[in-house]
Length: 193
Image (cartoon, rainbow, N blue to C red; front, top):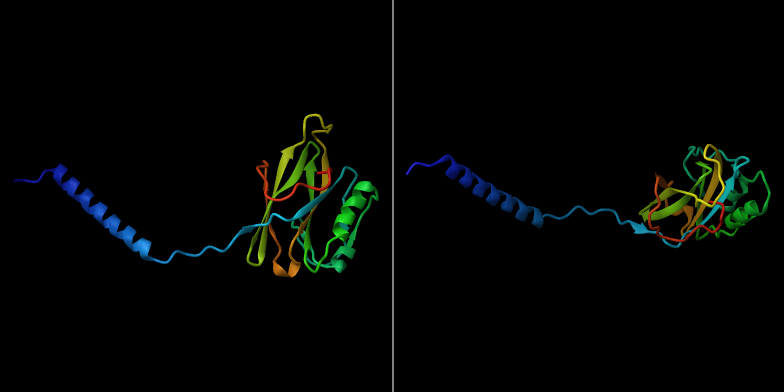
């Protein structure tokens, strides 16, 4: 009996299924590639300092840090390199947050950013991998009852105290999301965000 095109295509499909099933069983027997362990850090603390009249702080050191990248404060010497231009209660609260850090067990990631006046920036999450940190910042609109000017930008200082000394990780990577989702970890300690 002569074979029809339909018979040939059906046989080819059956053989393809068997071949793929064989590949699947081979794949199941192989050792999976191990991804590096990533753990959420939930016991960090955050303080913010928002300035409409200039820079929230200055850092005087030749550590070669890139603009936009966080400063990593890992010692009292690093802390001594921070100066504040406008001494007021918000600045004192931010400075106290930094000074209360026990640098034997903790370190501080210090960000300085510009932000539109009608927005606030929050820490969404901190993740730790072997020898590295990853921080996600997010931006959200201020509540409608908060007075702001849409065309104006403020300077914002964000300090994140993490529960390990700075010699346990390289410079952290940072990503910024335009929307805030559910966060891991604490809320900011200062209202100025």
